Length: 596
Image (tube, rainbow, N blue to C red; front, side):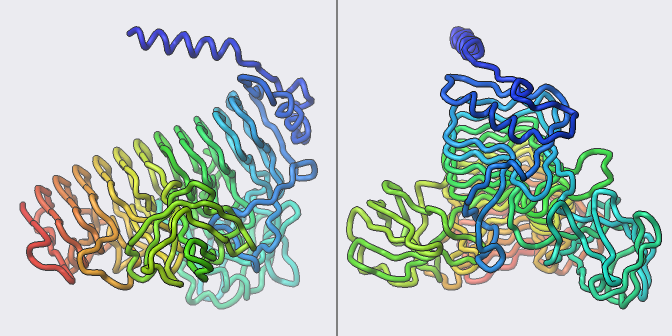
């Protein structure tokens, strides 16, 4: 009780010392539709140097235009290549650089962004809170049209009012405020079933388009292979990720609370090399009553090279063209051994490069790319980017002769603990969560509803996406997995532990200590869990129920284990006549314990 009152007194003391800055004092006028960008800049500037600042937005609508926005240049993980977007310049609505102890209080306001903009950037910030507001775009980057009639020769569609379009030379073009979609990617949505399916814009691109109503278009062409049906929604975006929804870079102690991210360009909320991130009641979903079905052009939340504690609590993800939550690091490949302590490294994936993947003092792991075997560790003495793609790193001590050109480095220091709880994941084309971190991970009390692919995917690779690293302590408990995986058949396992180690080293396991307990799986098909190169895997006391959501294949194994050991499948309750087949490869009977 004494500690409680001390904490309460401290909170009151901080509140009393906090300076409240009203954005209206600097010219921002809610519900005026005027550009608030310059006024908010001035309000942010006024808060610099204060011990505690509340940047207060009286409830209303605030519009942000790119004309007066801050122009930045960031290399952001998993976004775009040199070919797709060679100059990394982005305009930002709310730009916070080097700030401390600031709260952005929205009071239920709506921030409307125009053109292509990053809604906010936090760079080198500490103790920042953003709360009680909604983020939307006047013209979202996603275009949507509801199919009204579909035949082999024609399609009639109702265009959503937010999706600006024009008919030019008999072809439909999607456009926005100073942008035109050129590199189309399409996903078909079945709203009444909460399903997202891969589709194709090519038949529409090649067809003749005719405007037959204010928001209605008739397409004439070859639609014999198009799978859409009347009542479904075809959603189309430019696949190049030139922008992100929000960006948090090299920042610490960041809290997001009661945010409605109703539409986001690109990769959603990206947190890169940041520490202690608490995201509570963040809702990535279309605005209720808008008639829209997609909120994010790619991920909902993307974490790259973070550390400390990441907590995602009471969040909801609905309507995404990629994964709601992705947590990983980045493997860099050794291209040259310059001296016994100096290496030249290269970013390998075309969408990830240009940022400082290592800084002095970081601990690193050396690993063989084919096996993902970590064979040594070191500490960075100095590091610098020598080009967009290359880094030069000097180690504090010489590395051993085991290290070769072609091996990779992982940043061990920048790996987070993760808690994902009390959240809901649905209406996504791909996975629910991707997690690759060596520190403690707890995923509990969540609902995964009809995720297109695996509800949870654990990978680690140094040959494709180059997303690191090993999982060493993961608990998945008390979750509901409902009818997941329909886009990934026959590999439609609800949970997949799938490190990309092309070579298996006897006695070495990429992942370890993974416990999947007390969950409910409602499945239309047999596959539950697949795992590769994992030591200490427990699937226990789970309940498996049958669904008639889609036709199932009872000949498939429920479990598929390759090169694993200390596996326990015990105490699970299966529905009557459920297939409980366990398929193993590269394992002996001593590697697995199975009990009813």
